Length: 295
Length: 284
Ligand SMILES: Nc1ncnc2c1ncn2[C@@H]1O[C@H](COP(=O)(O)OP(=O)(O)O)[C@@H](O)[C@H]1O
Ligand SMILES: [Mg+2]
Image 1 (cartoon, each protein chain N blue to C red):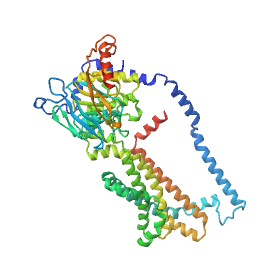
Image 2: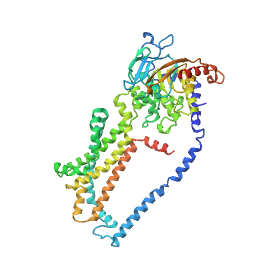
Image 3: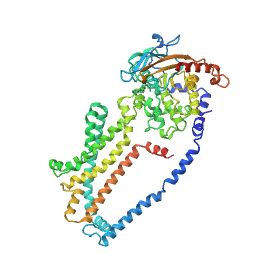
Image 4: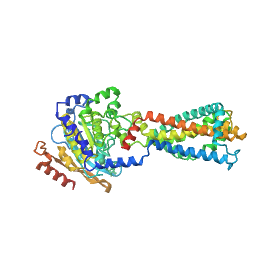
């Protein structure tokens, strides 16, 4: 059992965690005031939704066409697809970093198309700044938001143990192992403080054993804090073992065939199954369905 | 140790660090050897030089012996010191102005694409212009005072500084900028947190080169006319055929350049504390 998991099991640090987050939903529009969005499962307004997203980097060659997807509040969804099919491109658009050719991005029903800074986004690489100590790296979102450095450090410090980074506060990024850098990137993403989190292949830089640990740990944190998350992966097992729904992306943009959502697989989760969810028939059924959609 | 770290070390990777460590130990010479070997080489070279002149293989009026050079250095110490101060002051003034202007120019090139496109080729070409060649012009235009010296130093340091900074700013990972945009970072914050540190390495390399250019630039401008400075001293002792004092001034110039480079290195170490950690983890 990893240090991160151990920390997760004991007590109820969730309240402390939530208090440390800078802007928990503050300033967000009232969910009830907005219209329902496309792609959302029945009932309630989605935390995050894409409506007919057609994306392109150069304005000509389309990468994706008419992407509809939705993440309900408190839900972890996965987006799977082959390498190069446009997963990162979609996340960039959802994060507001690019403006779609057509379509909209809705955050709690509010149109945020092309507005960066409204969701927590963890990019494919850990992107720790080599010139800042770990604590200042994870504090970056707070400091950029105008908080004084001492205050930001005081907010972040108690979280280091929870994120399996105890003792690393004053280290430089180059002194950390891959797994620890990844957790530091998680902590930084967490301190961005939005209630919707986008993660781009967050576990791919880790070796197989570490990956399983960090993933379990992440799912635990997400559930405990009620985070809504959209997680990219190209690993079907990983997707099925963490998501409540898996969106399957298919297409080959580099061959002039824009990607589309080939289907959505609802995973019937049975996390308390003996031997773990990964050994159940439900897991296999969902996996088979995702594989067939991938083609 | 928690499971993630344990698994990173495990799985067949364990024997490798040991082997790498062994190879590193046998490859790296000891500290004493690293210091003593070049020292012995220099002493041997000086001994050969001394012998060649003492044995009359090269006439002494053309080539002074090391002992004569050191004697000249000691005899003229006060004079050399006062000329050095002049040269150093010109070099420092030119370097400071060159760095400030280069910084401003690089920031403009980073901020405005048009500015970059307009001046990038010019910057590259300017690297090939020998500053020695424009020194006579500067003396013609600006006279025998300190001004042409400082201007020559500015001209010869401005370009390496600008080029190293401009390419340093561009070296920042675009994903880092995207990440910072998702954190609502302002343009200034992106510059301060991402671009400036990314450029620091190249900037200091450029600054080190500029520091040596600065001393040499000042001396060359002094050769062409002036009242004080090591270049003026050199032209005077050349006219009186005192080659021992000529060599003495060359030594001073080299020492000043080295000292300035060392100073840049110290500043770099103080301003980039993360470099040491990176070097350590690379060696591991
Ligand atoms: N920053 C970028 N600029 C231009 N084209 C890009 C960029 N990032 C990705 N692409 C292109 O978009 C397509 C989809 O890439 P990407 O979204 O990174 O795929 P995935 O994340 O699924 O591996 C590819 O053809 C890729 O070449
Ligand atoms: Mg990708």
